Amino acid sequence: QEAALLTGLPPAAKSFLLYFDPGTIKLVQSSAGVLTNLRAEIAARSGPEVEVIGHTDTVGSEADNDKLSVRRAQQVMEWLIEQGFDRSEMSAVGRGERDLKVATGDNVDNAVNRRVEVIVR
Image 1 (cartoon, helix red, strand yellow):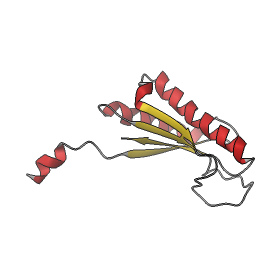
Image 2 (cartoon, rainbow, N blue to C red):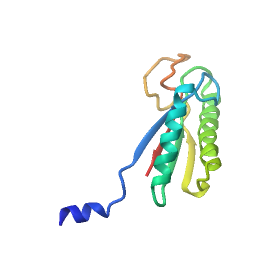
Image 3 (tube, rainbow, N blue to C red):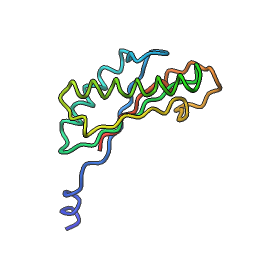
């Protein structure tokens, strides 16, 4: 009976991380495979919700990093739309340097912090 209840639940949320070249909206080469997996995950879900969250490292001003993080999130969302996914199922936000994956001081070039996280529900 418990198994029957569980089969009716939607699949658990999955998170994907995409990384960027410093100061740009250009993905690093190693993120190409993540895009493929992301596209497959969204396609496999019925009525998916996709949250795209842009982040930066601490190089540059907070204002510039806020803008860059939004541009990174929008870049990923535009790519998903080009793949045929519905804009209404997605949201994009930028967090700038506020949610660092690895805590650093100011003006630290850190590849792990230059990312977009995509959560698929």
